[in-house]
Image 1 (spheres, rainbow, N blue to C red):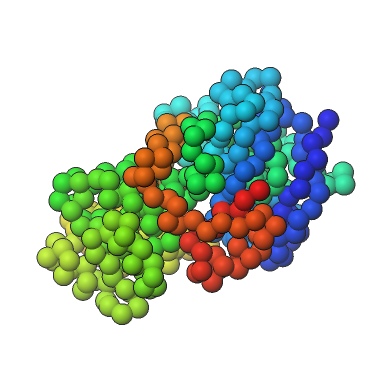
Image 2 (image 1 turned 30 degrees about the vertical axis):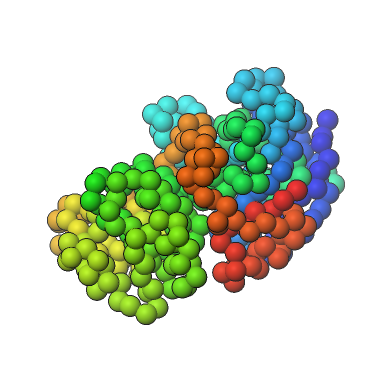
Length: 368
């Protein structure tokens, strides 16, 4: 029996989000129905809504949900009705990377999360007037009052922490934090450079501030965001609209270069500058995602000093352990995520989209 709810539907590429009555399929064996309390708005949602990725539209997006479990399928064991959950990406659970603790590199990650729009078996999770909609986005499609969620997208969290304060953990925050903790792993005396002071970049700054890194450098073109980065733990800032990045980093590091760089902008020119600014044996983590097929030119001889360029999806996080740890840090005040959040009623989703596009909101969170 289908479950009625209201969702923000994108009718076609470039169209606005439109609130519409829809029906959720009844939960399968490994699914749960979650009453949404909050969901973050991410640039990935906007990219898909613009038609930039082959996700089937009309469809329901949203992939940074947080809510309360209302019902579970018969094979679900990790959560029960009444549990508070943060929603993240899904994965198959059976491939080599899933079994090795790296579900963000699941062999079926793209169709299960980003472009498929349906369950792995091809069935639809959301319909409207009897017609299937694109859904199952990151195993959740959380731009709705209720979501039908894949079990592997569900992370049970501490009920004492307000869900409105931790919804962004499911994607953007764990991506920035994971870039630092899971890939760069700074040691005492390290210099970490974060290119771009949006939600992912500022999450990386906060994560670096919880490591032994000595220099934490935030780079952006917006002065207000650089000021916030300073308050969140950056030891240095560089306004790329006013200073040459290479010269500025050389001055900060005494000419040694950066041990780690997190590139969040998706701008290949910025990526190239980041690689050039690496110290010998330094690592750049590619997080920002330009359009499919985008290429970047690198100085091959410049890489021979042991430099590494590493791509990253969702922080390379194992969500069942990583997200609860982040929730605890939020609860204890050591990860001041609230500094990034701007709250909007769910009905104002298009205003949130406009504010995010204009740079007025770092991390919009929709409230139900």
